[in-house]
Amino acid sequence: MRIIFNWCSLFFLVLVITGCSSNSNKKAVDPADLDSILAEEAKNAPGPVRNNLSADELIKVSNCNNAACVQLFMKDLATDFVHAKKGEFASLTRSAIKDTAGQEMIMPVSTLYFSKDPGADWRIAHTVHKSEISNQLLNEFTAKGFSLQDSGYYSPAKALAYHYTSVQYPGKVLYFSTTYKPWGSKGIYLSANWVSFVFEVLSAQ
Amino acid sequence: MRVVYLFLFGAIVAVFLFLRKCADRKVEKITGKEIVREDEEYLGSWASKTKNSYIAFRLRRDGTFHYSLAEYPVNDTTKISGKYELLNSPGGNLNYFPRLCTFNESGDTLFNYYIRYITPYNSTVDKYSKMVLSPNSVFDTIEYVFYRIKQ
Image 1 (spheres, each protein chain N blue to C red):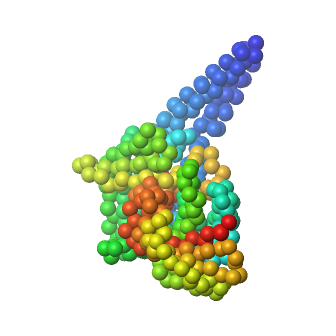
Image 2: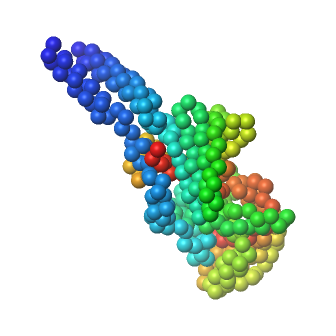
Image 3: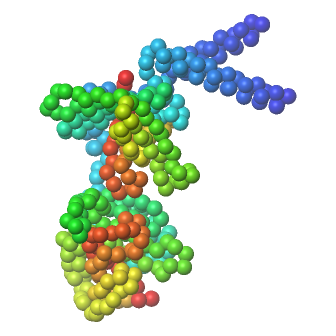
C-alpha cells in the first residue's frame, strides 16, 4: 500500500512539475525587448547578396539535363535563391516591378525555372524582371565573347529570341528573349503582365 | 504479462495527459493566460513592431480575439475585440497554408491571412516563438512576423 502511495505521490509530483510548463510559453518574449529581438533576428538572418545568376553559373547549369542536377547546383545558392517548388527557384531579393498598366508589384527580381513535367522538352531558363539587370547580365556574356549570330521566333518563350555564341564556349548557345510569357502558365508567370528578360543557355549536344 | 504492462503504461500516460489538461485549464482560468500545448501553438498573445507602429493581438482558447494597434508618434491605441477562426486548406491540400480569419464585433473581417509558419511546440531551432502571416499563400509575397509575447 505504501509503495502504491509513493508511486502516486511521484506521479503527482511529476504532474505538478511538468504541468503548466509549456515550451511555447517559455519562448515568449517581453514586449519591451521586441526592438532588440528584431535587430538580433535580422542580424542572424543575413539577406541575399545578389539578384541573379551570373553568366558563368548559367553556362555551368546548362550542362544539367535532369532536375536533380539543377537542384544540386542551386543548393549552393540557397542564400540567394529559394526553392519554391519543384522546377521553380526564385531570387530572395524582392523589388517593385511595374506591369503594363504601370502598377507596381513586389516580386522576386529573377527566377530560374526548369522543366519538371514528364514528357516536356527539357528547358532551363533564367528570367530577369528588371532591364538594368538584364543589360548587366548580357554584358557579362558579351565579355565572355558571346556575339549575336542569329534571331528567330522561339516558341517556348513565345517571342523573338536572339542567339549568341562564343568561341570560348563551343557548343553553347545563349538564347535571349524579351517576352510576357517566359514560361506559359507556370509559377508566378501564370498570368504575367510584366515584361521578362529570358536567358537560356543551350548545349549543342 | 508484457501486454498488461503496456496497457498499464498507456493508462498512466492517458491519466497524466488528462490531469495535465485539467491543471492547464484551471491555471488558465486563474491566471488568464493561455497554456499552449502541441497543435495549439497559434494560441496566446502575439506582437510585432515596425518603425511606425506596434501591433499586438491575442487568440484565446474560447475563440475570442483581441487586437491593439499603436501608431507612432500618436499615443492613442486602437483596440478591437471580436472572434477568430482557423480555416484549414481545402481537402488538406498541402499547397495552401491554414488561414487565420478574425472578425470584429460587428462581423467585419480584420485579418484574413495565411499562417505561413508557426514555431512548433518542441522546436529547438527557434529561440523565440513566432508566427508568420501572409496575405497570400504564394511564397514570394509579403509576410508579417509576429512574436509570442509574455502576457
